[in-house]
Length: 418
Ligand SMILES: [Zn+2]
Image: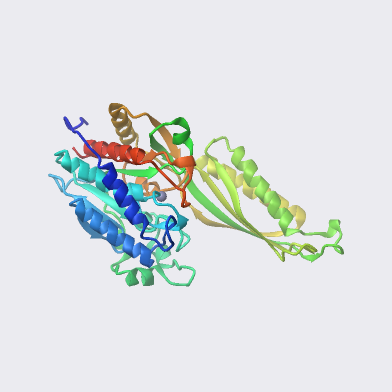
């Protein structure tokens, strides 16, 4: 694929920054905090903003039955599969202004810059704002892209309820979205390629002073819920040989998670016990119940599965030894995704030609691209963020890095669209 000749792209960094700052003010919490939970009033106003920004970039907008928004620049051969980009604008409580937003507004700016440069795409270029990348409302991330990729059975999506017991159908109807959830699924071959621009949300690029990361693998997240039923009793009266302490079984499981992740054979395996509750939670009472949630991720499925098997076996042994009963349930498990080698190579070549250092990376956080990669050749372009901070108000990326990301995205999309 040869690059379009003499494509001189000038990203309007100030304009892009202004839009990022304006969208950040649409929030359920006062600045600098950004909170935009799916279908909340702030999310709806955020969607209005994105629609306006799409129209300013002269893109035509359509929205599907769950609120995924598609902003399209029609190519000269509109029947060809489009080149896609995009990300999300929903934000977890107490978040910052860059996560997701850079990939939506940055893609609008990339297309606007291509237009200013006189580029004429053969394939259509399309920016997606995915619905509900964050799991805040339904406890399940990437709802929009999952449905687009057909990676969640529609019945499972229909069964989703938020904390107040409201269903997805009820909430999307209230937000003005109708039509069957089946219709959200993309037709086969809809995208020729998909490139998501995103802040790294980790420290690697900043530490190496590297402006661009190119994602080769996206780690697959999985999570599990463990409930342990032991036997309570008076901390003074129940002697050690007759104890069935649920907390101690839980502690052994937590250590097994660490051991399995460290010993998986893959440097990308990470295991975390982020929730650990015990009952009754009194200093003079033997814990009769423990509740843990385990997060286990990896760029490879085989090493993740091996780590999980080790955790399960250690948990079984510990519970048998202590005569503690265990329930071990999967909350969610998504396989990892690989970036498309050709698309990765194009992004890398663009960086080299622009004189920008780049680094091939694994995305340890999941993104909508985890699901887009199931239906399209996909990669992601990462830019550094300060201290690797994300999902907090101090999240920050420099205007220069954001502009570089948008510039790389514009060139990559142009190459993919010819
Ligand atoms: Zn994100």
